[in-house]
Amino acid sequence: MGQHKLKTSQHRMLWWRHGALGFISIGAGLSVTLDASAQRMANQVWWIWTVEGTLGLIVFMSGLGFFGSAVRHLVLMDLSKK
Image (cartoon, rainbow, N blue to C red):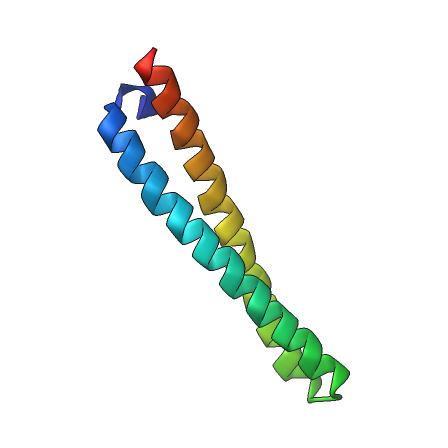
């Protein structure tokens, strides 16, 4: 709601930060989730791959949230230029 009152430079800074955090989190979350999948296929103890897979999905979903926020700030940055 108050996001429209930010300056273009503030939107650019938030776009850069949230985009970087989003990409790092998406990559890390996918990596952890795929490692948990490999552990499951190797017949490891069920709670190890369950916990690791759940944490990987949490990191992945937070990365998607940061990426969505970066897109929002990019759109608001473009709108504030007009």
